[in-house]
Length: 168
Image 1 (cartoon, one colour):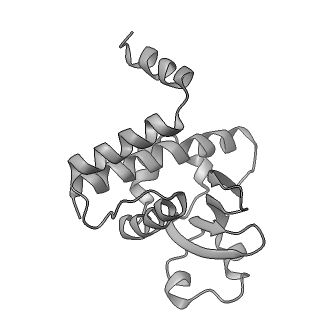
Image 2 (tube, rainbow, N blue to C red):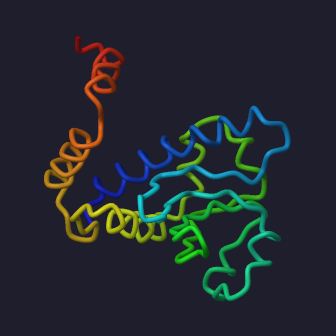
C-alpha cells in the first residue's frame, strides 16, 4: 500500500467527517450522530456513525473481532441498504465523546488505519470507483481523485474552491 495514498485518504476522511463532529458539538450532549458519505437511488447508504459502546454491544450478531475494539465512544463505518446494516467497520474509538475534539487532526489520531482502508475500499466499490487501495500508486490515485472531483463537483463549487485557494 502506498503510504502517501493511505495518509491522504486518512487525512481527507478525517477532515470530511470532522464537519459533522463540529456540528454535533453545537448540539449540547449529542453523542450519537452520523456523517453521510453517500446515498444511492437504490437505497444504499454509506455513512460514518458515532456511537457509545453500550449501543453497539446491543446489536445482535457482531463478531468478537468487532467487539474487541470498542471503547467508550466509537466511530463506525456503515454500509446499509436502508433496512438493515450490511456491513459495519469499527474505525476508531476513544474514552470521551467525539464532539469534544477541537480539530480534524485530533480525529486522525483515533482512526484505525487498516480498518479505515477496508471501509474506504468498500465505499469506493459501492460508488463504482475502480481503484484498489492496496495496489494503486500515488500518481494514479491522484488521477482517480481528479476524475471524481470533475465528475461530481458543480462548476460553482469548483469556483468556490478556486477562490478559497486564491487561484482566481
